Each structure stands twice: as structure tokens, then as C-alpha cells.
Length: 304
Image (cartoon, rainbow, N blue to C red):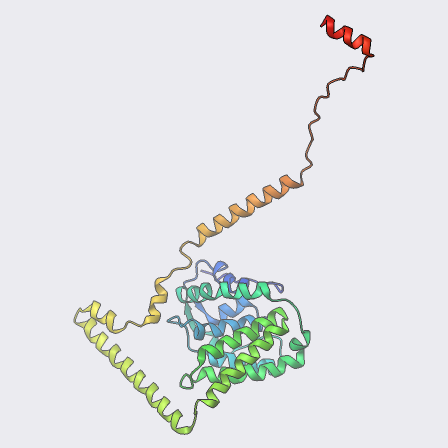
């Protein structure tokens, strides 16, 4: 099956581009990062940054762990003044299941749409080319922090990247400044949390122990599967993030679209009916009798 690709509109908003990944490719079960970036557009660096920040904000399983590296690469291109995005083939070939992508997009799209409704072009100096390069340096540092999970504060780093990216997309200097402040606070939290060599060593050891426990549980789950104990294997492999995949946001998508179309049709008919010139009915006016003199009026009353 040939993969359909949505040609992005230069005026389309970030939420529309993210939803368009799914609506323009209804028959694709597994996406590649390259296909997703093609749908977003090579010149929409902000939308790509929002996409790569989603796995840290919404920890959906089966999402490729390349968000920090990709954010750093895109930020480096912003520092260089490039207007288009390009990533290595090792990143572009990574696969993303449709269910995981749909859960992440539908979980963040309402928040992004709410932010887009209140955003407007202001403080244009914060989105000028020189400011973009300075902001790209901050995004690069945040991407490096996200790439190393032992440091911590990944959701806060990713949230600041998303706010900055939305501000750049909407040319909203206030949103950009808010995202920059959030990013600086997240980096300051690392610096003030006693992040010394000893702390780093303990965090690395804790992370390695966690990986060892996970590997041990996976090995035990595989052994249970071989013995036919599938339910016990499922319990051993269970993670709370897997609960997100129980939600299928696209299951009722056709019904929701039909309701939206029906509402739009009724609104269009109502507006056309309001614009149609209305014909006013003229009320029949009874002819009024001329006033009679006093004598004749009393005579006419007597005869009546």
C-alpha cells in the first residue's frame, strides 16, 4: 500500500498538523519517524519539536526513545539558522505504532488547541532570527538533559520545549518567554538538587538496577510463556504506562466527524436562512368611516 502523505499548509496550526498525521493516513498501522516528519513538513521545525517532546510528557509505550537526541539535533539546526529540518537515517527509520501515536496526539491535542486559542502575535522581537538562535541554544541544552534519563525532570524539560515551540509557531513572544522561564527553572532544579559526582553515580547505579530488574522480570516472563503460564507472564511484564494503550481514541472518530459535519451543516443552513431577505406580510387595514356631525351621528345611531 502506498503511504499517503499530507502536504502541510503553511498557515496550519500545530494541533491540526498533529491530527493530520492520523487523518491523512487511515490505513497505516506503523509509522516511521520520516513519514511523520513528512506529514508535519520540513519547514515546520516547531511542530517537529512538539512531536519529539510528547514521549516525555505522555509516557506511551512503544514510542522510540529518541526525543532528547532529536530535540538536540533540531535545536542545533536552529542555532545554525536553518529553516528546514533534516535528521539522520537512523532516527528517520525508527518505527512508531499507530495506537501509541494516536494516544499521545489525542492526549495533548486539546491542551495544544486551548493554548492556540489564547495565543496571538505579540512581542515579535522574541521570535526574530537572532532570538531564534539564542532560543535554539536553550533547546539544545534541554534536549541533552532529556537524552540522559538519569538526570531527571524530563517532563518539565519537555513541557518547556513544547511551550517555546508553540510560541515560535504562533509568534507569541509571551508564550516564548514563559517557556524560556520554565526551561531555566528546570535546569536550575538540576543545579540546586545537589547534582554532584556522587549523586550522579548513585543515580546511574539506581538506573542500572532498575534495568536489571526489568531484564530479570522479562526473562522470568519468557520462561512462564514457555511453560504456558501466559497470564502470569502478562502480570510480570505489566507496566502502568501500558494502561494508556487500552484507550483507542480513533474508535469513535468517524462518529465524531459525522456529528461535527451535522452541526456545521445545521449552522450553515441557519446562517443562510438568517441572511435570506424576509417578506413582511401586510396587514389588511379596515377603511375608517369619516366623522359625522353630531346631529347626523345621533340619527345614525337611532336608526341602527
